[in-house]
Length: 100
Image 1: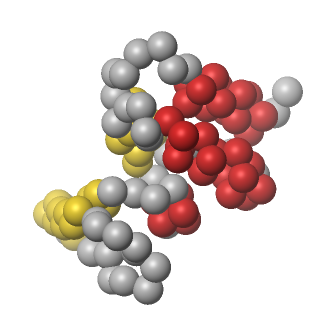
Image 2: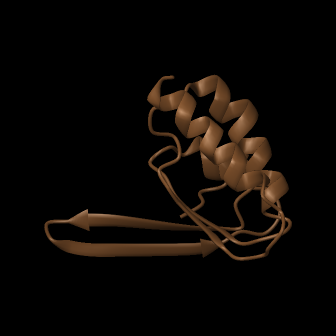
């Protein structure tokens, strides 16, 4: 079984587990995953799961927060050892809007 396949199975199990409302922290779920799984399986699982619990997701892939209907996006950038942080809670549609 490939690393991407293993990751997708674990993410499906974690995001599908509905017995508690503890927040989920997921670091770069897109690593080693096929684009098809991200666009179909992962994003749908995130949308369903976020109605029951808070999801804190770290990603270098802008598709995930945009299509996953993020409610808040925090952008962190390391500029010569100075960390710049921008945060912008989102309301309504984010299509065509400069998010941060």
